[in-house]
Figure 1 (cartoon, rainbow, N blue to C red):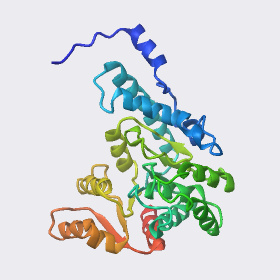
Figure 2: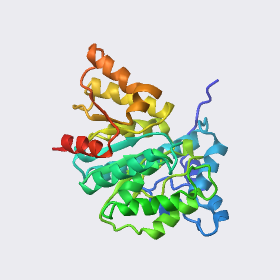
Figure 3: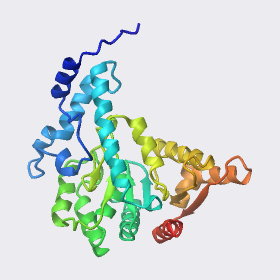
Figure 4: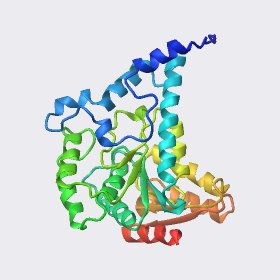
Length: 315
C-alpha cells in the first residue's frame, strides 16, 4: 500500500537540520572534511569522523528508504555534489578526463596496483584529470598516482612502502597509513584528481588522496557519472563483478555513440582480461562479427603503452 505524503515545509526544514550530513553542501568534499574528527595517530577516533557518522546514519535509515523526508534530503545533497562535479569538469577539455576502473580487493602490494599508480601519475603530469570510484584497490591506486604527480617516480616506491604496512582495506591501520603518506609526501597543489565514491559501499574507506571528492548516496547516479564524464577513455585494471558491469555499460555507451563519440577502452593485464575474466576477448569477437560497433579496444601489460594510448586520443 502506498501512503500519500503530505509535504510540510517546516517539518522538512527541521529534518534537514536533524540529519548529520550537510544537505545543501555547495560543491565537493575533500579528505579534511570527510575525515573531520579523525586523528590517524589515535585510530580510535575514526568512528567519530564525519564520514563514518553519516554512514551509520545511512544504514540506520536504510540503504533504500521509504521515508520521504530522508529520500528528499539525500537527493538534495546529491544534487549539489553533482553540480560541484560538473563545475570542476568544466575546467578541463573533455578528452582529458580519464577514468580508472578496477577491483577494490586489489592489494597495495600487488604489481597491478603499482602499475595503476604509475599510469595515473604520468597522465596527470600531462594535464589529464584522473577519475575513480574513490574506494580501495585500483580506485585508490589511480588517485595516489595523481596525488604524486610532479614528484620523482622513486616517490612511488616510498609511498608504497608505507602503504604496505596495511595492504588491504580489511587490514588493521589501513586508514592510518594512508594519512602517513599524506604527511610524508605533502601535495604540491599543482595537480587535481576526482573521486566519486558512495555511502552505499561505506564499508570501503573513501580514499583521502583525491583533491576533490564527490561522495554520493545514490550509487546508480554515481555509476553513470563515472562512465559518462570520462570522455578521454577508461582504463580497466583487474577487478570482479562491478568492473565487469562497468565494462559492458561503457561498451554500450560507445556502441551507440551516446555522448557523440567513442572513448578508448584500455585493458591492463592481458592474461586477466583474456583468460581469467575474458571480457576483452568477448568484446573483440563481438566487434569482428558486427554485433558491437565503434569500440576503441586495446590491451596491454605495459603501463607506458596505456599512457601513450590515452595521450594519442587526446591529440
